[in-house]
Length: 141
Image 1 (tube, rainbow, N blue to C red):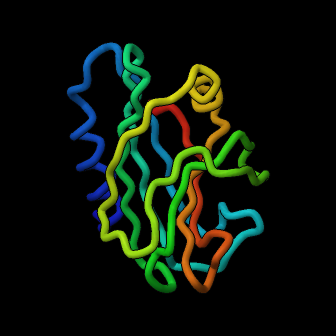
Image 2 (image 1 turned 45 degrees about the vertical axis):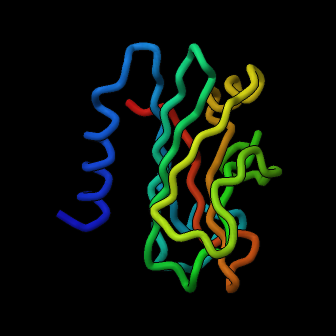
């Protein structure tokens, strides 16, 4: 089992005991998913839970093997996998130390975009300022 699969399995277990009103989302991040694609050994995992009653999205982001320290990371949207879009939710800022976790209250329009698979997460570095790794956020199966 690789480090990546071990981390993803652990995060999946953490989200397994969620209340029925919650929906989970995931994204696997890599350089090939950036637009345009980036040559990077970096990988990452984003996991989130949306509470339908409170509209609160709680998330966790982990990544490793980047070209250098992360300068920022965000959720962007609305956009398909091969398009770029503006920041919807900032996840980190320069100098933050991971793993990263947080929460944001979403609007109905944001929830609709999230459910439609129109959000992506990317992590920026100094070498790859527009983004080094990226992953489309999808409903967890």
